[in-house]
Image (cartoon, rainbow, N blue to C red; front, side, top):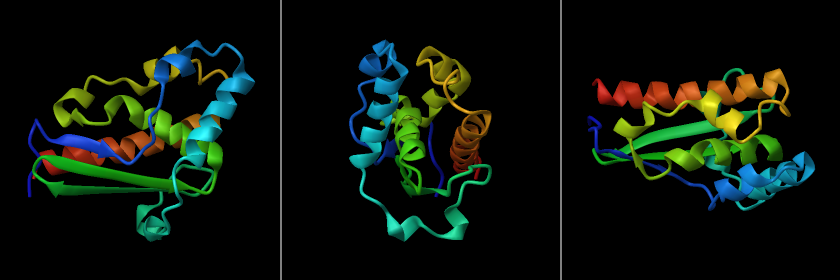
Length: 146
């Protein structure tokens, strides 16, 4: 099965109010909001398999990507860290229900800077999020070029 340019990415995430998150000036409140996002997602033991582990994450993080049909890529994930799980929600929010042709213009570094996340996250956490993003975009590229 081949993905098309109009294939949508569907992420199993709670609603993320990016404007509110961006406007929170107090890091502790922003951090709490990120953790609260993780609490809205049930743990997904089905994907907690080595084949879905994201290399480069300090906390075990799993990412499962599946081309459901030529119009839909389903994204599910989990992490043993509430912060990482919440951050994954934040990273996926702007691409949720977007066409795969639209995510090529998305710049994760700029997005994290805009939300003022990079200056508060450790380098290893930023690298883990980048690994998560690379795994997702590599999958999208692979199903587009089959």
